[in-house]
Image (cartoon, rainbow, N blue to C red):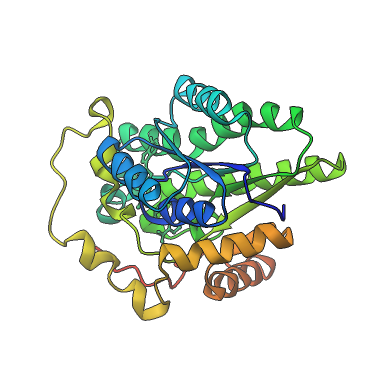
Length: 289
Ligand SMILES: NC(=O)c1ccc[n+]([C@@H]2O[C@H](COP(=O)([O-])OP(=O)(O)OC[C@H]3O[C@@H](n4cnc5c(N)ncnc54)[C@H](O)[C@@H]3O)[C@@H](O)[C@H]2O)c1
């Protein structure tokens, strides 16, 4: 996709971090922007800021883990702007518990919450928006946000990695199927390394029905556990990340990396697998609890 002006973009998780950077960038490109987010106050603020900058914006409170919410998002988008050309299935969460506890001490609620938002959110986005795009005769593009964790299993982010590798597989398959049909719909998968955001404060949006009853151990603050990131890789701003994403969409690039470190670590992992080695902890700089 090369022309963005006056086209319609939908950004899930658009009120913060990477999604906010994308929403701002869509507005800068002259697009009509639909921001979808579960966090009502942040969504309102995002809408206000974009409108103040002269953008045409629709804010739709959406829980992407609910099919009915994603269907309502699509309906609101089509009612307001007549279609959708660029879809960012970006909303995602990570749990603090995984950072601090081994996999076997994570709960079924942790699994359900993260799979619901990260993986079902993308599945619903694709299922609901693709038929709308098929009916349109103009170029369209879908960007699904996976992660470096889609390629590399950091043991403190196992549930997260399960969801993100699912997004990677879904996106690869979708890309190939659409390409084989010479479709006007392009697909990319975003595998960021470190972008400044509120991802490690995601617990703020966990629904009450999926909250853990046991207290979270606070031996090390989350900020300390993740602070090592910067020592192995620079943290990008959401604006820098959006620059990379838009360049990739324009050039039709499928795999979008924000840091070559991810490819380097994946190369090492692939080499180990091919040489029959057993798994190792990838050095992404996360402090062990
Ligand atoms: N920041 C990074 O370094 C990084 C690295 C790899 C992947 N990612 C991925 O990037 C995406 C964006 O995350 P971010 O880092 O900007 O974090 P963020 O917390 O700043 O933004 C995520 C947004 O998603 C929203 N959200 C949470 N649950 C939702 C739900 N059920 N329905 C709709 N919206 C919901 C949040 O309110 C928030 O606005 C996520 O998919 C994340 O997994 C981020």
